[in-house]
Length: 190
Image (spheres, one colour):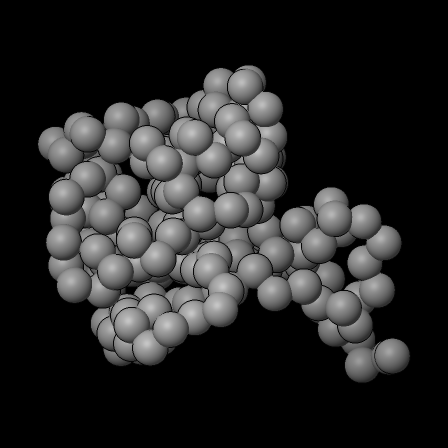
């Protein structure tokens, strides 16, 4: 069983978090561990409705309070295949970049870095100022992958769901879980 941590911070992009949860919960050998920040709970409710958090929690085998700094995912001895933070707010990015583990989401991300595991940050903000960019460079230098939720227009998406599906699948594929790619591979044809 491959353990994957999904962190949900307070930036816009709750649909991406939900889709990642759906896709990961559909993989037979993946155990999903979920941590949602307080701001993430608010964003889920605002963007997806009052039942969104409950729906996301149902997809996970394990759900943790962001205040539970002693949870299993806060320890390097708890082996995971990696973590995706989707969406990743600039506040969470800054905390991760500077090693400020003041909640379970940022601590779990810090653990991925210190253990040299995969950490995918779907950084969500625009425009970016120099502090945002420097934090992105810092976490990249530490081994994380910054993956802004940029639509692949060459795929000619017809709906928002098409865009969300592509971003979610690409993020999961970054973990290299040993499955065929969830995202469509480019075949070279325009």
